Length: 229
Image (cartoon, rainbow, N blue to C red; front, side, top):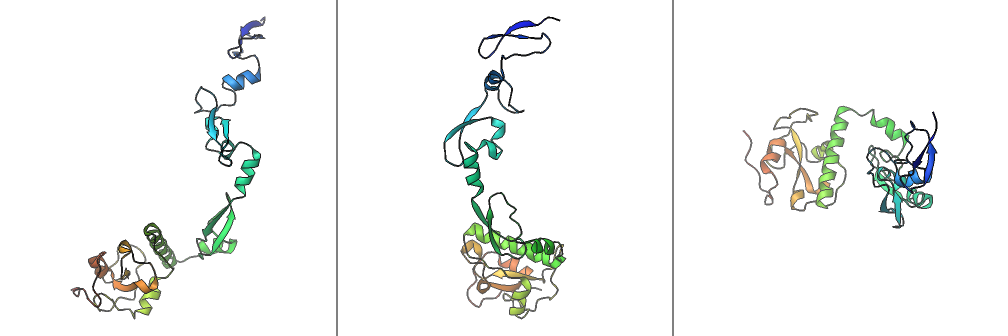
């Protein structure tokens, strides 16, 4: 089968090709500039686009499919390396210790020991961790101070007595499922929604039912809710 002469779709130059090859461009450069070479699924047919470098702000030309990758966000290897040297600070998911690492490095545990011990937690310890994470998230969203504490610490401090109704609180701390209304819970004296801090000085022990009945109200000093029947 003889070769045929075709015009390049990019520059118009004629080139020889086999009839069944389907070749459209005379060179690799023309293919990269105007064709599908270098593109991935999802790249529009217009070719490369202009974006701002995430490191220095310089305008660079890249393929749309590379935007989600670090390679397509920087003008060169130097800016990419400088960005990788940036540090980020996080708290260990197990012990809460603060640690600073390079961007892109694992940021969940401060050590291998914490990673190992995280899988050895009891069910009650997991429940306390979820409660702590919820309180910290609420305090962070409300821009108030927060400190770590457990329900057991607050209950022992208050003598296992509800500070809203004055009655004794069950010492059995629920772990999962729907707890009883007489079970213990932590109540914020000044609710977080009213600007109260998530500190030990601003929390007290209360029945779950009393806590739900109080909601986010501010009670006068010494006022008690009606005893639950």
